[in-house]
Image 1 (cartoon, one colour):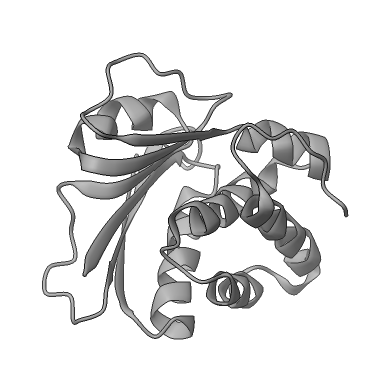
Image 2: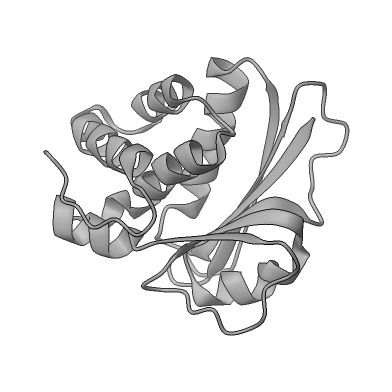
Length: 186
């Protein structure tokens, strides 16, 4: 079985880091095959970017995706650009404070909204963990990676001084339920 995930947003939102963490979690800690590719604009911050992760139980022969099973959109531009390439029956996760549903969804799309940026600011006083909250939510909502694997990958990637903050944000995302308003226990 192959699952294709695209995470999209703007430079500075941690989109590439999120894709790298997800790919590492799957390939090293969940013992599956994965590929990770990235695309970004010429500016360091503020331009469109995306990371693409392919997950498989078998070897992956082609590392690029034309259509994704799961779209994670942290920006309006990314949502508008990649929503049409989501497969029928796919899943779309959006940061509901940054992405507005402006066009009709493809058939049988499973849409989930989470205010990741607001939750990062309100609960952690730091937007820097927006991507990690979304990774936790992606993991629990879709089941593409185990909690243990994503936790180990976060610990192995983020700087040591930031591990507690990122693990708290990851656990917050893992436990978040759609439509819920709660505060983190930090």
